[in-house]
Image (spheres, helix red, strand yellow):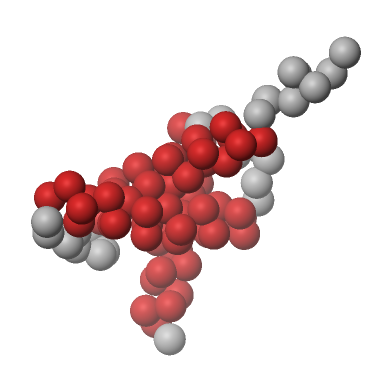
Length: 90
């Protein structure tokens, strides 16, 4: 149970930092930050493992940086798919 709580906290922090970097913090709440952070950790871990051939340590500074990078990539993809909304207005 403690590990699940740590994953949620880790994901929330990574998602929150990524949302600040991508300027989406006002649009997503705590639950959005947690989801983005956890999915971002998977994306970042996959990319790190693909590029280096090694796994990143889960609960470490390096792991947090990889999770934040993955969350930023996820938010960039979501922003690109959604667009900025200005092109649709006349």
